[in-house]
Image (tube, rainbow, N blue to C red; front, side, top):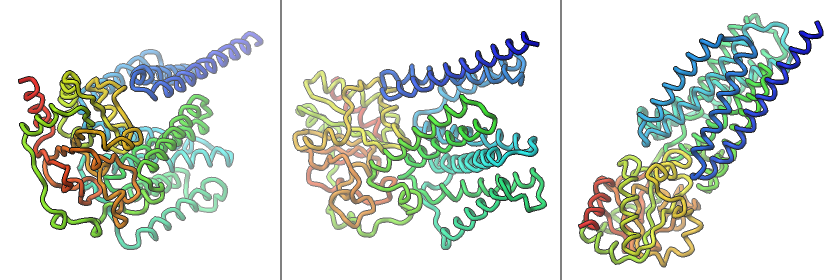
Length: 470
């Protein structure tokens, strides 16, 4: 009997040591993600920690045999490999949204299983299950709506309707009442399964109504917030099944997601409540300057743009979602290298909310092997913008819109931008005069120092590269 107890303690000690090691790998991996130079190693470190935690848990609980664990690893690895290699960089935000949704539904299933199979549960356990199901359900359907908006399967514009706040309030009140019934009251005649179905249904509806009113311009904030939700759901699931490593990993994801959400909001000079409930982008900004009041745009051709770039001492490249759509990052890097060989100082200004997910432009430029040393933030380059000879705005719109500092009636007024309008010359590479995610006109296009280089961004940059080579 003593030997059996000793062996049990030994096994428990080994499992906890493995969990501690996995948690350390999560923390170090998260730390390494803070720099593009170590991000790949950080991702691998965190993924390895999660693999270790999953295998140890399955073995410790005798859930699966070695054969099934090996099959699961093989299938999951193949899915991950093809997802990473076949999904285009322009579709990366959608994939992140789906991953958030998968995390949410996984936590919901864990909580649901415990609730259906359990009996005489404590109030704390019932509360943990309730949070797991609620947050997991909201994350799942909210992420699916975010995926639809990002992939343009559904319109990226906010969906607003009369009485929306009343409907949301009633839905939240219903969730509170059902939660009280689940945790403490037990007054209804509903079975555990029926009560669970009711909570899941309300959570799914809340997830849809939570994201559907949010416009495409705010998607970076939504992605960060849903990422945090998926972590919080996993953390709650950890309390449900009493798994330490799940609690730690979920808390890390939840906290880092909230920090990132706060950074995104500050980058737009807006509160989280304004992002979630303002319906930003539902209507065009009538107070913004109209194109007919601004005058005419001044197009430029490739040859003239080349001559100006060739004579420039400094060039600032500002990438946006248009660069991602055109897959122009490799051509942009090649142009930057040719400019540097010509004696030009080249930098890349990255706005925190450029693109459709946090760090979107950084990922694209890193894929093209653009050196991290030449990436700058708006506050680094704005003070010396008057000394920049040429700013090349490639597919960006709202993050360079002067209305943010000049037009108090604009919905983006007060948002920190990259102040390219103060540069000596501005090239704007766009397919057309269409507005950005915010749905408002950009006075930059009509400034006296701005020139419009119309066409596909990749074709335009490639033609400039050809001019330099010739």
